[in-house]
Length: 458
Ligand code: GDP
Ligand code: GDP
Image (cartoon, rainbow, N blue to C red; front, side, top):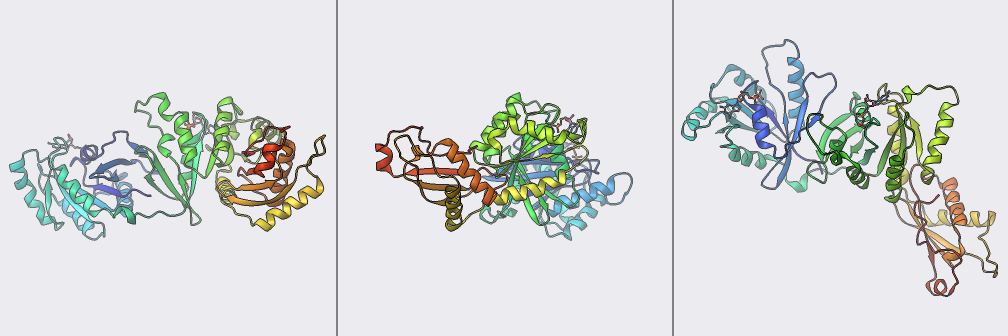
């Protein structure tokens, strides 16, 4: 579900950032710097009366001066307003009404977004009402006296704002591919995120995660939507002091758990480390689709064979993820970054894919014909009666057999390979559940431990 956004508008020095900090209950600012813009757009999570929303500081809005970066800031403010459910127009009660305020008000009146007029710097309650009164002239309805520094009057402003937010059950929930960017520190996750959102044609907006500080980002490409999971865990703000565990492995695990497709980012200079294997294990265990993204490929000295040799090394270290595609990229130069989206599309498609029972049974019959299940010394042979896909994300196929103990790991891997060769399932784990007839399974002497599931196999 996406969080509604509230834009804070006003000319410089009226106290916008003070107001934002007063409204934002969570103090770790999430900074999304837009390329080509000298001032960042800052989104902060806020809540009031059980409603969660984001406040975005738009920078000082000036209309009658086009020097330096002012047109850019104005563009930013307009972009921010376009994605907002409501706006707070901050004016300076101490200074009183100015022509710059009138210009902004004129522009705001032409917009469809509802506006709450906040008259800041009104510390004194009695005097504040008088200070605020002259702003009726802006034609934006009732001016609310408040003080960002002292906090008085903010409750009224928030009451008004919350009244303008869309009802929670109407907040749009579009089908989108949920993508987690996972990897050790310094492998280039945030560089990759920047490369993704820096693309001109992608529409980017921050939306709520499941926890208060997990901010997801929505990226649109070719009319397809990608939700980048917990970008707050990727974009660390350098000047905020978090404990080292804050952006650590638990956070990565949580992001993996919420995703469909994981980009497992590996540093080409380090190769696949033990921690990378740990992340890969979690991805496979959770049944997520995965693309192994070997980053910093620009920093590797290479000849024509390097990529193949390197891929072999990666595969050897990630052998329980044989199904994952590998791509060699440079987040810094942008090399092949674009191609990741195509790979995400394929992996996501395969991850949620459903295959009919008749097709699955054709594959089984064919597989058994080429290579029949093993026979024990006592002459008992494994038999597969039939198979059917019982769920997706990841694709899970139940195989009904005479006795799972008779179908050893080798044979199970063979059958999984048959499914992959015939049906694909690129980029996603495939789960096979081996189901025996209960009575027989109990009676049989088990030569092999009977795995309930082959899990992610191979
Ligand atoms: P912005 O540029 O609009 O974001 O404004 P700032 O938040 O940076 O504030 C501009 C100046 O106004 C600073 O010196 C603040 O201390 C002051 N200021 C902000 N809010 C208040 C307030 O509620 N009362 C008073 N008296 N001063 C304030
Ligand atoms: P994160 O901790 O995983 O988010 O990693 P960062 O994105 O902060 O990158 C860590 C370091 O690796 C930075 O110094 C980047 O400049 C560098 N880096 C990231 N991507 C690349 C790349 O594609 N090539 C090279 N040579 N360096 C990179």
